[in-house]
Length: 251
Image 1 (cartoon, helix red, strand yellow):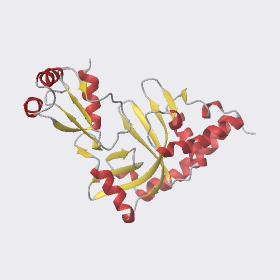
Image 2 (cartoon, helix red, strand yellow):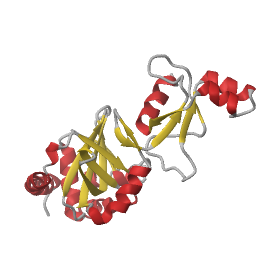
Image 3 (cartoon, rainbow, N blue to C red):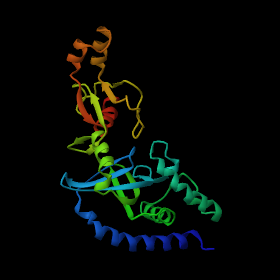
Image 4 (cartoon, rainbow, N blue to C red):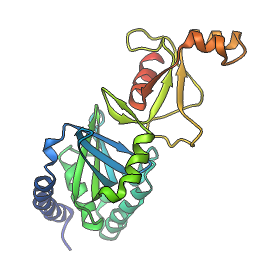
């Protein structure tokens, strides 16, 4: 039996070879923007509505640049993708061969090791290639299982209907905030329900928040009505903007 380093190096070399072919075939480096929808497990790479490609994906794991830790997707409670359970094959394999890096949900490691983990996951999950998205201090690694073609346009259409095209973050789920919430002055942050990044929403729910002053007016006017809504002037933002506002205004 190979030790872990030997095994991971072999799988990493395989990934490098297949990844070069995959990136060349789809010209991945030509796309400036990305968006992924956890509910549909769909990744969009694009430059415009006329220059785009869609892939079905399986989440492999995430890497925090703050804590220098890798988290396997099967350990990530914020990941709502059902396909994340496919990575449990990696965990089972690790348990059989006593490869601890494959059995612990959260481990400290160097960023370079992430692609080794992806390579190992690819051994068990049939895929075209891999892709990494970068959101500030968090890297998210995915295996792309197949391209969505014109015959899958219904799924793509549904994904776009559930999203808003944000100038800063691309296509994200919609959210609603009052006019007073900004990133210049903390004004408090009241929510319709407790939220966290990546959470799954019921069909009737939306991310919605307002400032302390709006909360005072809402209470004075006995809830949301014409008067309180006129004061709040609720506006549409994307999910990522919402959590940036939440983090800043709850200080």
